[in-house]
Length: 537
Image (cartoon, rainbow, N blue to C red; front, side):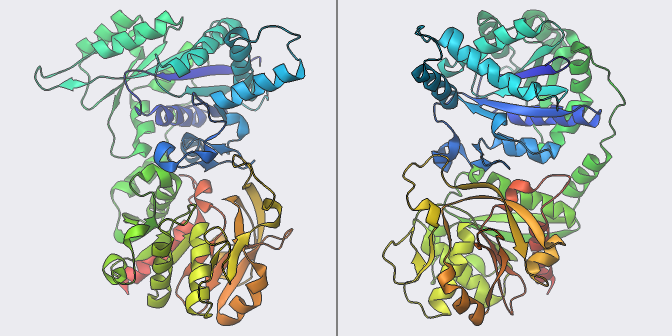
C-alpha cells in the first residue's frame, strides 16, 4: 500500500450525473501523464452481482476477463483506459454482506456480535485496499454508486471516512459530483442543491476536496467563488462539467478545467508533462467530421433502454471512427419484426446486428431478421443469441428442420440445434454460473473471421449457457453454414459464417466487451466497412 494514492468519487443531488464518465476521464488524464491507474466501482445494491438483474433495471451486465459479471461502468473504464478490469474492480453490498456472513458462520469473529461497524466497514476497506496492495497501480479511483444521503450508501461513506484517516493526509482525496440546475424563472444556475449535498456529506464525516459541478451552461466566476466559500474547498477545486455531445469529449473538457492538475497537486504527486492526447483529439475530430454515412439496424428486445446494449453501441462508435463513417443505429424491437413487415423494417438498412439476450420473448423477430439478412445479402452480425438465431433460422428454412429451436426456448423441440452445455445441465443457481469470461478460439484459415482478426488464434469473453449442438455439425457444414471458430479444448462452436454471402457472421462470444477507443474491435470495424460497401453498391 505505501505509495498508492486513493481517489473517491461520490455523487449528490441526483443520480445519473456521470460519476463513471468523470472517473474514467480523470483516469485517462492521469494515465496520459504516466501514472498507472485503475478504477473500482462500489455498488450499494444487495444483489451479489448484476448478472441476474433485468436489463431494464440496470442496463447491460459487463463481463470481465476473469468472468466477473459487473456493472456497465466497468465497460467505460476499459473503453477509456484500454486496461482490463477484474472481479476486484466491482464490489456490491450483496458481496460484502455475503463475505461477512460466511466468515461469521465459519467462526472467524470468535463469537462477537457482527455489526455494520466495524465488520461491514472493515470488509469494504479491505476491498478498497486489494487493488492498491497489488503494487500494479500508483492511483486507485473508487466510484461509490448511488447518491450521498441514500441509506444504502451510508456504510460506504463511513468506510471511506475511516480509510482516509488510516492512510493519512496527502494519500487520498474525495471528488464530489453535483448538479447545478438552471431556473428559467430567475435566469440563473442555483448552487443551493450543491451546498446541501456537501452539507450531507460533511454530516457523514467526509469533506470533499474537489467539486465537479454538472451544468448545461457555463458557471459564472461569482458562483464558483460562492460554491468554494460555502463548501470549504479551494477556488481551483470547483470544476465545471458542461453537457457534452459525446462522452469521449469529457476527458478534454476536464483537461481544460485542469482537473488532473488539481488532483495531482492535492495528492502531492509530480505533474509530469501535460498530455497532448493527440490520438484522443483525432478520435473526436473523426467522430464529429465523418466522410461517410451508414445505417445499421440493432434488433433486440430491450431497445427501450439503450444502456442494455451499451458496449455494443460504443463498439459501433469506435468502428465508425475507424472507418471515417457516421453510423446511425436504428433501434428495432424484435417483437415488432415479422415476415409481413420485414422489408419495410429492414430493407433500407446497410447492415443488421441481432443482439444478445435471454428467453423466448421477441425470438421470432430475431429469426426473421436473420432470414432477411441471409436472403437479401445484407451484412449480418449475430452476437451470442444473435448467432443462435442465425443457426435456428438456417435449420428451419434451409435444412428443412421444421420447428428447429434452442432448448432454452423449447425443451422438447424435435431439432435441438442449440442446446444447453453438458456442464450446465445440473446447474440450478442462476447467479454467476454461466460460461463466463475469456476463452480461446481457433479460427479457420481463409475465413471472414480470420480476415477480420488477422490471426487464427483469438481469445474472447463469454456469457451464456447454450451452444451450437455439434450433433448437427455435418448437416450445417454441408449446406453452406461453416463453423469457422472452434474452442480448441472443448470443441464448442464459437463462430459461424455463410458461404456465398458478402458478410454473414455469428459469434457465440461477446466481442463488444473488448472494443476500446485505442483498439476498436476488428469484427465491428469489418461489419461497418461491409455496411459501407453495401451502401455504395
